[in-house]
Amino acid sequence: MSEFPVDYPPDKQTFPMRNRIVSGWSCGVIVAEAPARSGSLITAQQAAEQGRAVYAVPGNVDRPSSHGCNKLIQEGAKLIMDGSEVLDDLMTLFPTQPMAPKMEAAKTDIVLEGDEEKIYAALGAGEAHINEITERSGLASSLVSATLMRLEMRRLVKPLPGRYYTRLI
Image (tube, rainbow, N blue to C red):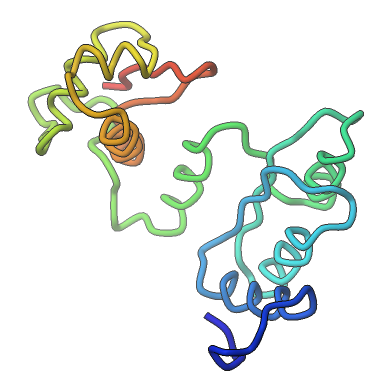
């Protein structure tokens, strides 16, 4: 989406204008990696000016590609280390639209659709690597990844470091 005509060639001056529109349509922006001077930081600034949430993933202080994120955190962006933190924050913005059953809900309250049931079962009781889940479920890896993301958004599974997953309920 842009205020420029379709045939207008992209250049570095037009990206901030386009990203202003994108950030305006968003609930917030996440900056995962950004050097000290970055288009991502321009977008984050625009989002903040528009009253949108700004999230940043912290990085090693010795890496130039982390300086922008670390500065955003210093300036008040919400530090995130896990996608569930963004979901928690969004739940406070939209509390009337719960994304999953409450944590104390009984397992019988969970309604799994399509391949969700296979993947949830393939997770087992402990932690499982995405390759194990794919093998156990017998589904394509792209379908497993997409379904795990849906289950994560519903707060039924949690990603762990190293591409491992675990059930939350």
